Length: 96
Image (cartoon, rainbow, N blue to C red; front, side, top):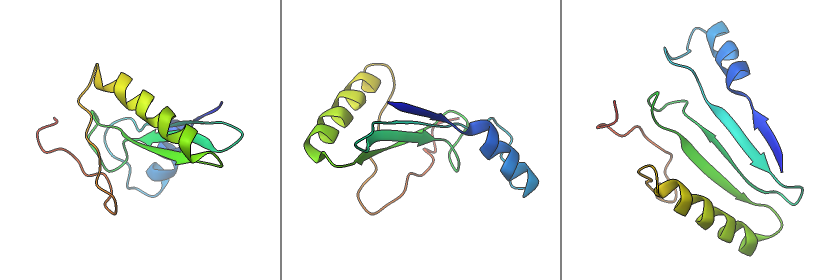
């Protein structure tokens, strides 16, 4: 997988626009050559939340298995909420 870590660049870009939050931004991802992968970040959320999105690339069945595996592993350590289709991730009010 090709890994991306764009948090520092995103933070600098937002600071130039004078809209940067007062906590470090996270923007990371990993994608295979066939487009199966994930990206995650905390822009628009609290400093303690990260939204993940998965891409199916050219292999939807493999992408679903991959996403299910990642979610099950994350769910063993953290609370995981599924964002309903058609809606973006919103901050959890109880997460401070």
